[in-house]
Amino acid sequence: MADASLLQELRGVRAATPSVWFMRQAGRSLPEYRSLREGTTMLDSCVRPEMAAEITVQPVRRHRVDAGIFFSDIVVPARQAGLGVEIQPGVGPVFDHPVRTEADVDALPPLGDDYEAALDPIREAVRLTVAELGTTPLIGFAGAPFTVASYMVEGGPSRDHLRTRALMRSQPEVWARLASWVAELSGRFLRAQVLAGASAVQLFDSWVGALSVEQYLAHVQQHSADALAHVTALPVPRIHFGVGAAHLLPQMFEAGATAMGVDHRLRLDHALELLPQGTPVQGNIDPAVLFTSEQARFAEAREVLAAGAAASGHVVNLGHGVPPTADPQVLTDLVSFLHAQGGASA
Ligand code: 1CP
Image (cartoon, rainbow, N blue to C red; front, side, top):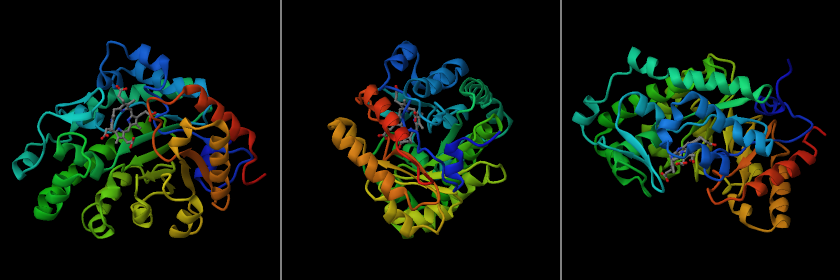
């Protein structure tokens, strides 16, 4: 069977019609999500295979996007490994015991057979999703070591990731052990999804933009590479994405990506100048245009297509996730608009 257009673009082969999916396409912007989730906590919904599969398929059905993004969260692996973590509504992931000292790192659970077994509901959810999606590809994902470790060190969401960045500088060996643990945690979560049927992966290093190039190279890049190494032997494209991380694009690519996700702060043609020739890119419609006139929205979509036209492959996405307040109809109409445009091969 021929690859879906979206996978072709990720492999650097242009298709006749633009391909599109949205980060956070599942979730709170959809009424069918809110009603299905009622009475179930976010993290419990991630380990109920039927529910996770249904939530993953909802936006594909509704918006006709070209891929599903597996419904889960970057802290699900930590939870399955036995850490106390919840997603607090309106806040985000919150850990019971922040990891800040050498003793805290010593106390992290080993990632042995118990962890592999705890990933069974994830494998089952992926299998159900892939069966339901048919020819539409499923993108698996994991959080990158810096972003996941930041939640663990800070205890929850943080604006500046100060404690994490201080740990990196003051106790680099403690940081390195924590980041290695997360790389193994996330890497095995990624691999489980691919072996169960996901046909591409995205490594989310959402908060890595907080780091300088020097700090990234010294303390983070190798750990992200270790996470991605869990799937490099498998035949799936590997997208790497960060927010506000334009200054890190080449280094993030070198961590073992095959395609780069770009946020809305950097035009795709400028991103291409920073990346090795032939790198497929993903992005980067400003989520703010979901709240403007249709005319402004479609103008932005056209500009993004034009800026990506020179790439070997381009998958359209938003520059970051769908805000919970977005009108779902606006997303559906944006997908139809994009599909009506000729691709770069046309
Ligand atoms: O109750 C709810 O509905 C909670 C909202 C929610 C959802 C729907 C959270 C809490 N996570 C998710 C699902 C999720 N998270 C997905 C799958 C669905 C999809 O994309 O369609 C994915 C890929 C993630 C990944 C994720 N979680 C990231 C990386 C992507 C990004 O947005 O940068 C991050 C940083 C998280 C942490 C997180 N989880 C949830 C929230 C509100 C946050 C961010 C909190 C913060 O500001 O730090």
